[in-house]
Length: 167
Image (cartoon, rainbow, N blue to C red; front, side, top):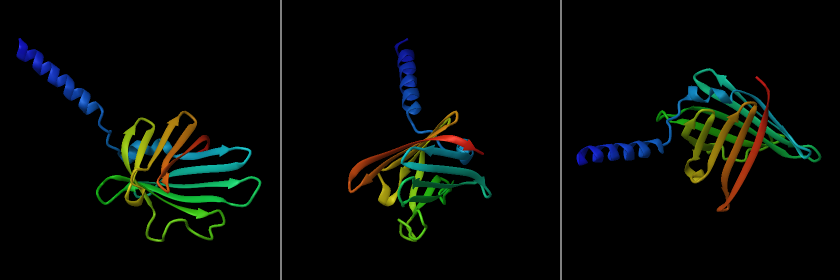
């Protein structure tokens, strides 16, 4: 009887240990991101747009412009299966007038999907962005972006709550 209790206890421990592991991500699991999403405040207007592109990938664009002064940022983004099969978010930033890129020509920001849950994905930074994370979470008509970045070794968090603006 003691051996049976030991087996049940070990099975329970194994179940708890495996339930804490990150869920694997598949591109099809991220289709909930598709659509146009807006966030407007008195100081800025912004939009993020995702489409299901050809070749089994998501293509995105984003912009944030100031309402009362020049400047802002434009992003080009893609989510696709990388060479290893991992789901990768690749992005580049540009000045609002597209005159210059923030990243080097051959060094886009790279993040790999580390955890997927229904309507949530967490991307972990790669290379120069190790230790950084980008999380997308959808709740109905709200798409929440949370970026946990390191600037000069100091943590900086960016949170944007986009409202659905269209397909």
